[in-house]
Length: 346
Image (cartoon, rainbow, N blue to C red; front, side):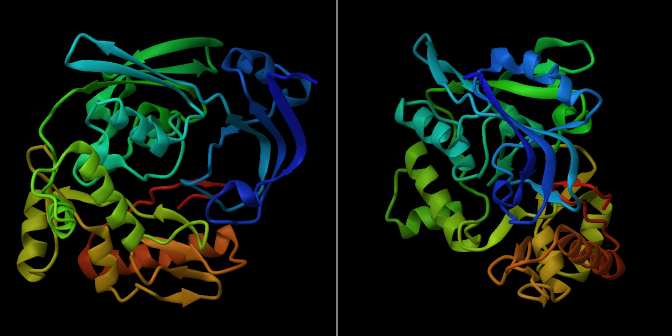
């Protein structure tokens, strides 16, 4: 038995996705040393099978069993290397817990990730989704991403530009069957302008009695907001936000805002484009707190689908489709799912 990896046949995935959906995989492989990844992929029992990288399962919906190999990169080392006085490079293996990485970088005196505190998942998943929250997206701080290329059988270090980042998107997401992320490298500043004007962050700081906020105080505020608004996967199955905030033409956003003055509209940084609040659209259609069997919508946040017990992936998927159809019918806006859906199309 290798100490660099373990394998398991007919693996139960119910405890490996935060929606707690019942599913199995033909094989499961856990890699403790990324240097062993090529050998794992070449194991004879895996020949001809598809593979799926699964970390903590916080951004996936299993609509069916998986017929191939589910891979987990368990290597979790984090190294912080200062570059002079004003910046540092943080290099994390894919299995590092994201929130602990945020706290570790802040404790070492490096800022930038505070608005991304308490996002569930691992470092390797962060660039795939280009995670973001409270006005900040990961790609702003990415120096490079190291990934195994299934097509060439080689490891590549991709620059930020080569990663093809977009809103909740990257080339790793678009080319999911090609890349296996093994390392994330971030460049963080000692000081930068704090982002306090998004989704109640400044109000939370004021409620905390903070008048001169630090990056660490912002992280505390963000954690308080997230714990208050979002259900805990340890208490009820969920994958966080199930839908992306839709990006639409600025003219469409203006027309919708005129017809619905309460609709939050955000700048995107792209001329002629605006971002709408998916949660507002869904709540306006009356979905918050609704339930169909054990598949439901969280009563605290309309953007979150929850599993009240034994909902199947298909049942949650169908609920998501019904929600999207109602938003399209009322507002003419198409919603896209944020989690990766395995075994079905949305």
